[in-house]
Image (cartoon, rainbow, N blue to C red; front, side, top):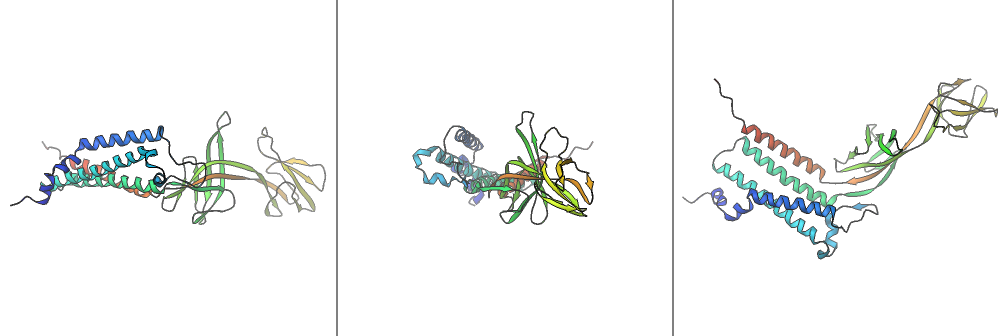
Length: 319
């Protein structure tokens, strides 16, 4: 009886060489070295001086091949690594199939190799779609971000002792009223995780006094006036003295000499309840369609490792 197809494939010399773990390790090491060299030393035709800025590898196709030979060498090595992974995984699966060992370790190996291949595919998708699609300035008024409308509800800026910016924490609200925190290394994801808002900076534009006028809330900017209790009250300015423990308002009644008032002050149907701070966030809009696939690859690989380790367990001996 002639050998079965899995047996013939296992005896294939080409399959044995390509699926060798040593070949996979060598190719993986070469890819790592090439990536390090391309990131640290070798120039790229891409330039982020203008937005939108594409990070797609398609720009290399428009450049002379000889100028960026290192990139095509990286593509070739990565392709061989993918082939080696697929062949090596197939070879391992065939070995277990021939010996009828379709246990947990079999499925664990299957998921691990599948996760690795999906991860390579995710990086390929990312290499063609990643980039900065634009800039946005988020403030108190809703701003279009993709199919959403975002506005900043509140925010805080933390500085280092030397005055440099340390952290930004802002609360944004979308069109549904859902609120999320954003800041450095804390982006706002949308479109299924393929796009996100990446914070670059922020600033507070100033304070606006909030008054209660005859039972109704009013916000008065510098120079604005309001009638209450038979008098005309005019906001001259908000204190900008950093030595004051809390902001104050310079308020004039009927053109008389003004007085500084603080939150909690009230007189004749007018009271100062506090301040609204206008907070604006500068952010980049980024895109990477490979992120969902990368998350899937991580889930497959992690599940595969768990199954493989579970399959290695042996029942404890009973005395």
